Amino acid sequence: MARALEGIRVIDLTVWFQGPVSAQYLADFGAEVIKVERPQGGDQARGVRSIKSLEIGDWNQYFLVNNRNKKSLVIDLRKPEGQQIMYRLVEKADVFLSNLTPAMLDGWNLSWERLREINPRLVYATNTGYGRFGGASRPAFDMTVQALTGIMAQLGEPGQPPIYLGMGSGDAYGGIMSAFAIVTALYQRNRAGHGQCIDASLYGAQLFLAAPQLQSFLAGNSERALQHSRREAANPLWNLYPTRGKWVYVCEPNEDARFRLLCEALGDGALIEDPRFASAAGRAVNNVELIAEFDALAAALDHEALLARCAAHDIVAAPINTLADVVRDPQAWDNDYLLKTWCEEVQREVEVRGLPVTLSKTPGEVNTLGLQLGQDTELLMMDLLEYSWEEIEAFKAAGAIP
Image 1 (cartoon, helix red, strand yellow):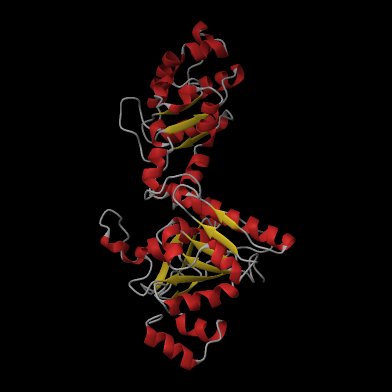
Image 2 (spheres, one colour; image 1 turned 60 degrees about the vertical axis):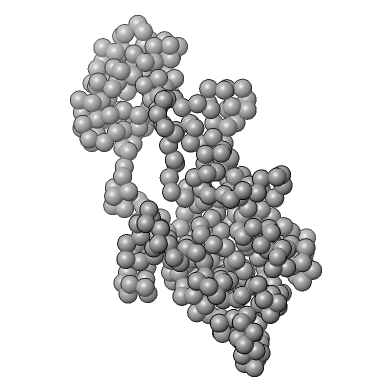
């Protein structure tokens, strides 16, 4: 069965997370992704075991999963001969993707202006830290951009330290935005006949991640920019509550009918008759008192009992699961959000994050995990780039390829 992006060739000159995961999404749906790496160790994520704060177990899932379904080509782009190889690859490519700095790309003669001369149909995609325009040029990491975009300032209890949303969440979201932009540009190229330069920055992706609160702030609600205590939630029916087990999130509008149902689920019909809570306006004004009542009722129940009662009363609620709970959830496996595949590094089947979307006619696949450094170099040089063995030996002698 042909896959959705079969026939699309992508040059993947990216490192770490956002760029590699963008190319990974394209590879999962059939694009031929050629990961171009430096001879000196390749993508820095190959050495992630040296980062003691990131536990990876006995196989490097950080690198291998983000670089699944790809080929590896090693080129020393500092050398003119290496740039010559890249130019021939660009001639045969549909997409050039990089998250290296513009200064580094310019230094290797790989700017948009240079590559579009070689291939006018090329989609030239960058993943910058802060966007192509403006003066920001400092290094960008997921956590520093979360700090800058106001996301962390909204998380946590007032008076307590801001909370980091999670390892790589902005990178992962930025990778999806990048893949979306690439596919959009390819669609436009097929109509117009020429490529274009696109950028999906980490800063832009995380501003979009903050979109609901950010848009509310832009519309004049300055309170949305601040940390809020769950004990002071404006709508007590849309809040987090403790139980004897897990915390449970209840999500209901502040309406009289839904209030009555939630009170019945919590086992206290008397609250329904409390004049303080008899209307939506009253529940909003007396929110602290109502949340305290709900807290006491929920804390007397096991989370499974509370969830069963909520389901019986058609109340939307969910437990606060751990990752251990998630990997046992059949829903994640039935939809291929999690799946099993073979890992050459440890010679066994391993569990990996799967595909975030489902296509009925052209589903994505995970065929291989991350590749050995340069494993496809000679084959690509001969079959795709059509260099003779003598030319390949000359490139080796010049240090352009290993």
